[in-house]
Image 1 (cartoon, helix red, strand yellow):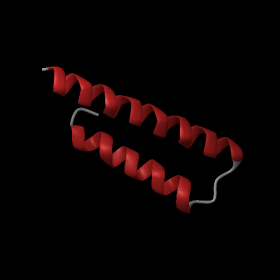
Image 2: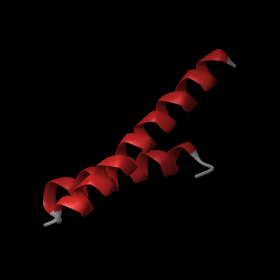
Image 3: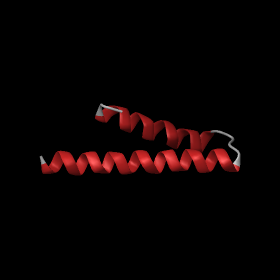
Amino acid sequence: MKDVRDIYQEIAEQRAELMYCILSAEERRETQARLDAALAEAERRLREEEGA
């Protein structure tokens, strides 16, 4: 994900998947892990941008 908008799109998609899709326990864990990683990346980018 090169563009900041990409990370926010990824976050939106993962949140929607968790809210509206029927997922197995394993799929839910994987989706939550991807969401957590995307949120951490967005926060890292924001801090980097503020520091620049």
